[in-house]
Image (cartoon, rainbow, N blue to C red; front, side, top):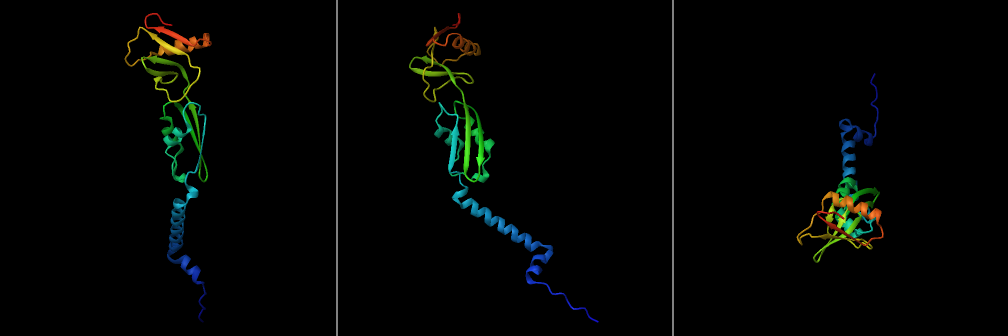
Length: 186
């Protein structure tokens, strides 16, 4: 006696053909198509950037340094964006968080200047973290540090001057000008 063949559907036969290879191939094709649609869609491009913590550095400069214009949000590395933002003068630390599908939040910690140093017609900021830097914004009410007896070349300040200036500002916060002579101090 002959046993009748079991009937199977065409869909089941195609899915099980080759040990499920066709199903895997279909899933791969579907995934590639979905990624292509996501890559081309404006929904997945960075559209909204929030910058927090800026008072001296302009938020536009932070966004430009982050290189976020038309960036694909799926491929952004928050640590890499933070490193690029930290390269901006005046930014000490940056934290980047991503919000799906197209939002980025950048929190910065700025280096606050201690005083303004004027040498000839040039002006520098005396910074806590970087020493002497070119002004990168508008800071109101900074005291002026004058180097007495210094040459008019590009100045540099040793670490002890920064420490002394911090102590002088704490001891005499109402002063608007501090004088420093290399041999004598403040």
